[in-house]
Length: 224
Image (tube, rainbow, N blue to C red; front, side, top):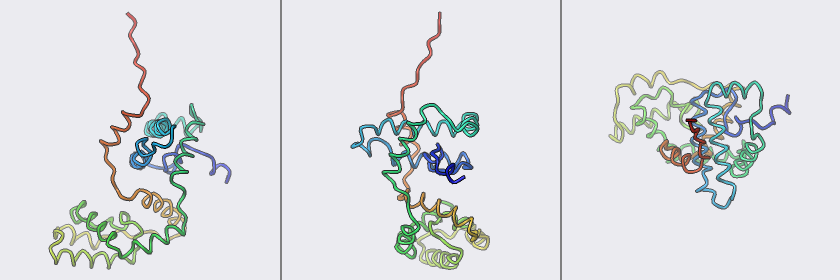
């Protein structure tokens, strides 16, 4: 069982779990493509081909039929090349340890960076703070009063808008699970969040990179 978990998969290449939703796969691919596109890795002569494999893996896992076939067989054409792309990614971005996260937590919590993220989340959701703990990195259930106090202060200072939904959603904030299983899931999510900062994901940019570096599609000619 342990050996199976350590095997390379397309899911590992895209930094998602096998049970990931299509939305999660799409989001992770876009963020990963920003990190790995050839313009940012010009020292690697094979960066273009490796970027192509990231895109091809996404095309497989984002297609229900192709994903089902891959899940059933565990095989895909050019599997070794996909693995090479994963090794390239892993060398660029080594796995983040629990110790690394603990160090980052000491710097982040109660910082200006955290306050910036709180304001960004508040404005993006027009004051709806129901899912704040799921969106603010390294947040805990015990942070709810502190976050609300910060928002109240910002509203009083007229630095953010006093939305009506803020007053209703503040009493409906979803708390986080604290059992061991949830903690492992959080570890994986924290790794993604820390690695992906700052958050700059632009769909248009990704599309441009795909058009620039993907292999040209073969055009079928009709027989006359």
